[in-house]
Length: 359
Image (cartoon, rainbow, N blue to C red; front, side):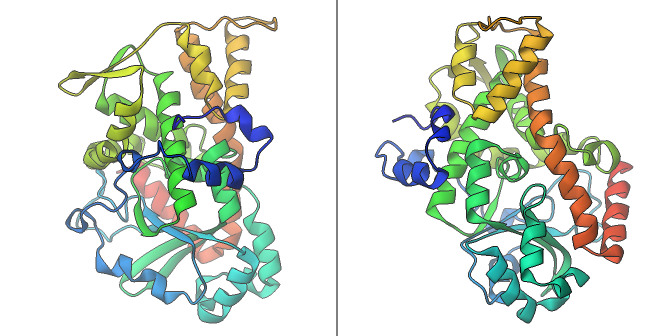
């Protein structure tokens, strides 16, 4: 069984059914499992991050840290205050989780908590399906944690419904609470991200080129990249975290039959036109549909049969397909955050984002 599967099969099978069957596949040996917990000496936060789940009295099935508050990133002044530690919590029943967290940590929420856990869980489902509580002081850490249902998280990892969570989890993570279903789902997510990135790259390219393409996925179409982020954010991430990207993606690269190493960090892919439809067929159905529509438009092919070629139009169509998926949920999530965070914290967040743009 191949690690990279055809995502057309997801139309008739649930994500959980797929994961349960994937877990049983003997071909998914340990060599495919990326290093999710890099040496603590290389992280920005150590024991405090490991202990953070003890501050919550409700079960968290999966938890991870990501972003500049966990991993070093260029473009941050060491003399300035550390950025927030970004966390994702995967939970089984969001409404119950919020109701219990109201009791333990009411100060984490804006006034929206007075509308009840049912309302909060419904708001959570808007946009990318995650509810963030920013600027929460937990011990010595300033934390922003997002709550998402396990089903919604797995669905995004496998189907790329929004790429909001899947895109973040394609980059280095610090796992605080692991889950076997998420572990396998994210390996699939990362392998298809690498496959999709090949459509945007030339025949030969560097590891940095690949990691830049991978990192760009979740930011393509995100409104924050135009008004509230450092324009060099993608490059800053890759340059500072290249060793983590290598730990994650080297096993996947070595498993790809049409990708080979040329030495000195140079990679070469099979650049034949006949492979393009095969690559697209093994990408999530939603993404593949957007790519196909965009490619037909750009190459003025309006029949049922499409002739794919390695060309600038294919690269642009791939970028546009990412943008189609990311743009709306990212915008909705940004707008939602202005309400769920409350006025004071929202203004603080906007101010910090704008300051990054001019660093």
